[in-house]
Length: 278
Image (cartoon, rainbow, N blue to C red; front, side, top):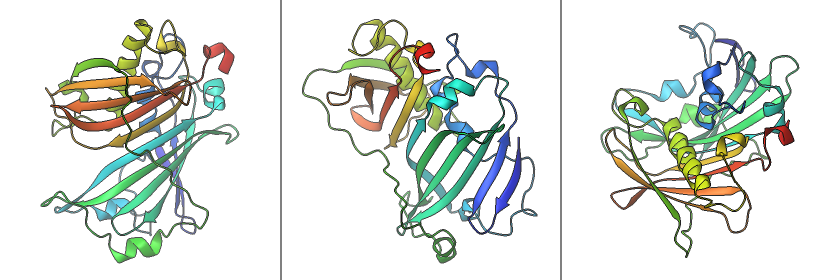
């Protein structure tokens, strides 16, 4: 992996993922949804300070501050499933947009290295937080000056879900140490893994009207996540799941820890098996 270029005028990074690997795909040939999110993050080897003359979000981090990922929405287009295999090379284009006083948006696109066809798009809302208070704090002035949003920009990130009146399907998981970072916090991608596992069991029980058999045979279309609270290694999480009443194929998930919401998530797949998508 490596940084290819940085456009100072647009603030866009371009980096390269040279090869995916077989472990990121299931037996049906579909990429596992939780392996998608890391592909959107710019990757480079070593110190790039000599390449970047402009400050980035990394310059926000100090001993007293951190970045909290508030939400993500990821859209995967049919071209991704048509073209991408374990031997594929992917380009990642990403940039930042300032949002208000305490948050900014990270946007990223995946493109085929061969002809730069658009494969997938991510919009992520990040919040600048004080480590002492765990509360949002104002972004520095230089950040707002560098990353003012474009007039036609639209973030459209996930919002809180309304519970349905009928009983949802329920699934319980225990957060494993292998799903956590060095501080024993469950990683962002593990939330998607938990939702996919829940969907697998729900489909086995015929809980969703649009899916049958094995959820792994369906190609992922959309991932939406709203992070509300943290999950630690050893925590037991109850997941409530149901298919959206208004949008067929959209699966909603609410994750709870001791009866408090910690994550709202939805997954949407292309209806029909992989052959119907590619």
